[in-house]
Length: 334
Ligand SMILES: [Zn+2]
Ligand SMILES: [Zn+2]
Image (cartoon, rainbow, N blue to C red; front, side):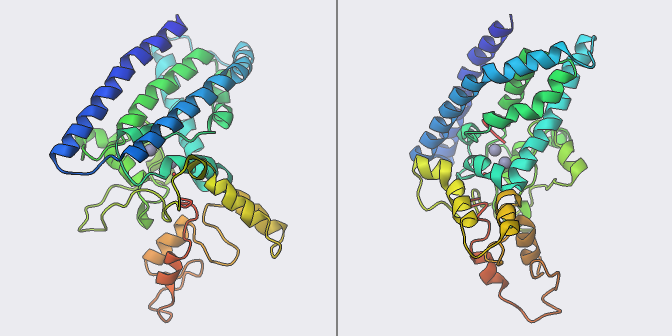
């Protein structure tokens, strides 16, 4: 029954994706907007295929763990409606934290960065997966199995919410009215993919937007006249767009940083577990520091331009800001 449910979902979503992607290509051509490129779309597709293969390969192992925990569950919701609603809400909450740590800890950013390295925004970017995320994503979902949710239901609901996670990757839908208050919408997710300082590491949710509002990572999309036009991708674009670069560039950058001879263990720790963009000498900036710089404060000092001579902040921004977002990044989606 559960397997049939998964297959049915696949049978429904595949033509749905083909239709919405086809419609987006037609509409973007009609409006003379270049929302697609062959090379970028090819990368989105091979990352999705490779990510699916990894997920299917390791699913058996974490399933065994989920089944064990489920058999020793500390709680069991018996009402079917409450069961499914609770599963959707709790899983979305756990995914929010997975996604947030992917952005705020460089070791995980090195995995998630692939999702953010496209400088375009279209439905296929939703398939531009964080390739190795399946290796640790299940850890976040362990509490679900322990609280009595069946392993197949956990995987099924994740697949269902990912459909929404893909749908939000578009420029063609501007605002969604009252749904903007409840769901993560295309407008919210455009902000998530933007490399403008104010937008970095914002709107981490997959389905519900109130986790971001609750935990301080919400940022609405602003009008161009009130801020800037959105710029998608990494703050420092990739030098090459080969599969090896797309997948491993941040790992390579981490390797170079932690093998430096002129820094101690503390600095090496921060290069690995600190926020992306952290640097021991200020040669790169974190998202927070980029925002401070944009707002007119010298990063890390809190001294405003009015209090101090106009320092070299523009230079700092141009530096390697965000190797993160060079390194500036669902599985399918978020
Ligand atoms: Zn996304
Ligand atoms: Zn992200």
